[in-house]
Image 1 (tube, helix red, strand yellow):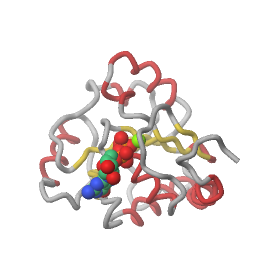
Image 2 (image 1 turned 90 degrees about the vertical axis):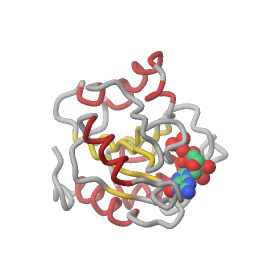
Image 3 (image 1 turned 180 degrees about the vertical axis):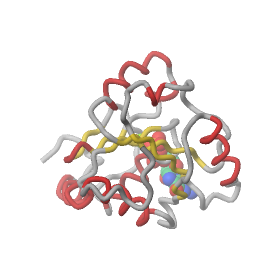
Length: 175
Ligand SMILES: Nc1nc2c(ncn2[C@@H]2O[C@H](COP(=O)(O)OP(=O)(O)O)[C@@H](O)[C@H]2O)c(=O)[nH]1
Ligand SMILES: [Mg+2]
């Protein structure tokens, strides 16, 4: 049992066990973190307003967009990501804004930062522009392009993250 009505714990725990991740999803409010988490988990998570960091088994963490967007929450963001080895940063395909000050994701040495362009199904998606935003802000390519709606790119990201856990480093090591 868990107290969050938006999470079906059995399904989410099974999804987390399969992924066995050790990563945190980070990005601006509404960029699709929780929807992507649900897609990665194979269900069990209802996309809804994320009010606090949500911790799943195996150190898989969904963060609220406010952690990235508001200076007052940077401490909370840093305290949350200190325990994970991989930060998955989402840039919505229809957004040109980068939600963090330069360098915040590299405060800790040795963390892998993976760039994801989310919501690629949107009619106003500009994937090339979103990739440029990531690169301009120090997140190195290659990037995963995903849609939680069409599920495009989700399996590739899932197997990359699962590969990190088993020490295979996925298809691309972005350390
Ligand atoms: N079209 C589209 N909508 C998405 C996608 N991912 C999330 N959304 C929608 O965007 C809104 C915010 O998603 P959410 O996952 O809660 O964003 P978060 O604040 O980053 O956790 C919701 O209405 C989702 O249904 C996507 O890949 N494609
Ligand atoms: Mg959320």
